[in-house]
Length: 440
Ligand SMILES: Cc1cc2nc3c(=O)[nH]c(=O)nc-3n(C[C@H](O)[C@H](O)[C@H](O)COP(=O)(O)OP(=O)(O)OC[C@H]3O[C@@H](n4cnc5c(N)ncnc54)[C@H](O)[C@@H]3O)c2cc1C
Image 1 (cartoon, rainbow, N blue to C red):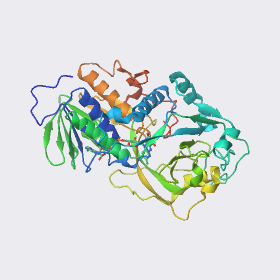
Image 2 (cartoon, rainbow, N blue to C red):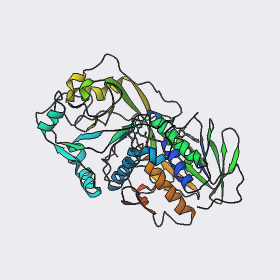
Image 3 (cartoon, rainbow, N blue to C red):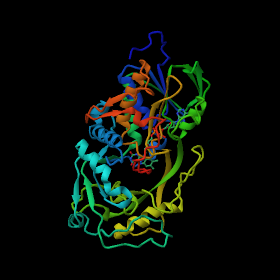
Image 4 (tube, helix red, strand yellow):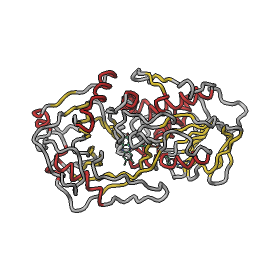
């Protein structure tokens, strides 16, 4: 990319709306390609939106090849985070903790047929754990079959059979213990390349001429010329789509759902040798990762009778509601020593969910307007790779490629797999392979 030489000091090629993990990652990637970028966010700093509530678990099991490949690339970015962002030792770096992923072959995940097939194809290691191995690693756990998952007032709750679902262990995974700091790391890395961040003001208007982005108006009244606008506004993304006059014009829609996670002490969550493991228990319908000390964070993978909590992103309740205990009720069947506390603590934050739970990384019918939305509760892990992929897409479109007609292809630099970005199109048919859940 050659920066427009006519640009003044305070003018930019691209404005990115949103300084979450997605917007900051795109900003960093565009800055590496010499774009002059401004990131704006109505909050006070980077990563203070849904990113701050993320459990930031990095796993590679997805129901599509492209989803798996992007997550695998993301894992490679996180495990080498310091080098990825290129920051020096004296700056705080978001900690990445390695932790393997334990999951089960169950009817509701089609016995992991696709994730295992794609893992083999991409060279992602995994192993099968027999009942003896499961009991060796987690001596106090109950490896009966409890599924399919139901909520606690369902008559089938608590039913179980003594057969054990087959365990599959993926050693390559982990979590970022401070997702907000990860966004700040990307901000700092982007700033070193000249990116400017404006906080406490958002994009309130979009200036269009001849179906092309001409500039934006910010909430403080500032008008800024630019020819590229990237919508990375997470749960607020639909508002900017409406402002661009594109409401209802794409095949894949997005909706905003409230998601709750619970914080509880459970020493028995640890493996016998103290190794960290993340659990995606599709038989129980709960997921879990370690936090500090003996604490774990727990959320729902979905259960019969659980309803979608669709909310207005402007005024949702951040306090957890009584239903937050449901995934704990289920998990306590697997880990009986966990018990059920009298009161629970945790948080509620937002998922920006697409119709098929696969993100939209795309151009639009307005030239210069791009979408990085619909992250569906599962794109923290991919964000570093998705930012690079978006920069590649923007670069291609800005140099004349008609992505809607001939989808751009992108080779993931660390893992080598090539993806057609048409996979993430706003105008795709809902992907029939999707789990239609946070698992992607
Ligand atoms: C509870 C929870 C647990 C999760 N766990 C995981 C997990 O374990 N693994 C995983 O991979 N993913 C997980 N996710 C999903 C992941 O965190 C999200 O996909 C990711 O953080 C979304 O980032 P974002 O930048 O799109 O959104 P956000 O972080 O919400 O950023 C969007 C930003 O846009 C700003 N904005 C809004 N309107 C405007 C405007 N008009 N102009 C400019 N800026 C605007 C907002 O203020 C906000 O800062 C989880 C999410 C939640 C909520």
